[in-house]
Length: 144
Image (cartoon, rainbow, N blue to C red; front, side):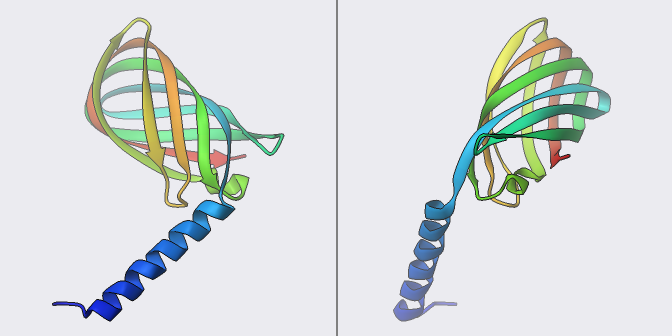
């Protein structure tokens, strides 16, 4: 189905207005959390952390599930920024990532995650443990 040029122009203008309005009102903060992951095919993860937003610290609870080829256990300390949030509660939500990797002893990496509220986590981490994984991960972050 073809859209008329007037409707197409309206949709583009509406999209730009919404995106611009979101960017103008959005803010950011710092985030730090640790995750312990273990599994054999189906894996589980859990942890805790802290969100620093407008000079105030908010405790975080982390939980997750992974499915795919997973074998072993690891612990990772993540630190970085969170952006595109208006309220601390915008960090609450489900973050999904697909990945593959292996770690034996210390290692590191960086990831970019987004949730359903539009919060964007840009984090890097230090990992320790013995794990081999090619899986789909779901991470749930909740403010306590």
